[in-house]
Image (tube, rainbow, N blue to C red):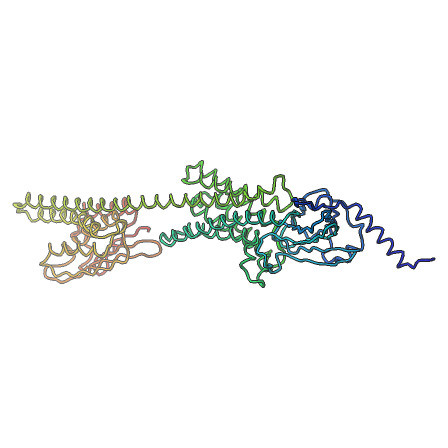
Length: 590
């Protein structure tokens, strides 16, 4: 009897399938059902072809080989993994085991039930698919194996949006629920804590309007978005049509965290004062933006993003150590906080790329580290508020004391003027009286400064329009018989020191103009202007009198004093113009 070619191939296929089944170590379903690892001892095929069908894989048993590890750790890859295993129920009761896949962000996970080399049942779950009604975070498949039955399964997993790693664990429904509830409780505590801190810091920002708090809120938001996507929490909140978008937003979440980490650290520690640290932060920020642009346009650089956020944490730790050596306040908080965050990031990153020299339970150190770092930084920010409040109280007290000091100085100067008036009341010499009046006006110029500073809220700048007007009013009363008008136009505020010097100069120049620029009975005008031009302050005083006359204008102490004040105190220059009167132009750099 001769067999056709198809018959020969069928027999070969059945033989190879039999050999494959013999090499498989069946997983016994005991009573009670014990938690067991599925991968170790199973037959595994790691494929580089993403479009291979289950029929093609089953038709070539030689693709499979024994797998000696308890976990798949392929990292970021385009490869797919096929795992064949057998469940054997030797008891007299039907068993209902659950197979759990502990990576909730795999794109697709297929479970095929195989019978006589063909698929008789198919289950599909994945991060790119809508969630089922169960509400659990990790993927799981509910199976049924009747009494004294053996079933063969083929597990197929693939993921391009995330790293390809997972445990496949067989467990009872009770154990699965206990594990899932503990996992969800830990995540609830973590997200509840972080969201509470975000709200807390937002209210602080709302009342303080300090951008540092806004940067930290941004960092916390992107951090919990990244972890919510990683743990599949977002999948429970998003519409089905948005699931695929979220699967490819990991780079956006991580790079958002990087940028806000840099902004927060730079603003809080004033890192711009240290050029090399500031330059490093700008370079990292540029790399993050480039990574975002490349990931959006052509290549999804999730692995590069994971490396960049870990590098950023390391750089911030080194920078904070340096700033701590420079006695920068709160730098120690950043060393501890970023070190804790980096430890968790390293564990999570090594887990994703397939390098895990530690138990999976230590992965909870990442949310624990993030929570610790968030609490630490929130305490630091709260202490900053107390420090700012103390500074504000001290500043308010200082302002009150300073205003009181100005008031006392003004009173003392008024007392000096009163004493001199009493002392020289009997002086008959007109020249001496004029000299005394000029000195009195100079004291008034200084006294008026202190009076204005006492009256206004701002102590750093002086309203020059008000100040000069008061000085002119005081001088005009001394020369009431003269028909002289004044025009004042000031558009620049000055510091108290600058204003005092300008007041003495104004007193000297206007007094000279009143005394010498106009003949008896002749009306005149004096113009004063203070303005800014090309980063310089210009102080102009001019009259429309008879002009510059060396024989009448005193070139002695008065003019020498004016030049000395401008040169030594204002660090400027004086220009005297003799044209239709006399004009003084004083210029100094702002």
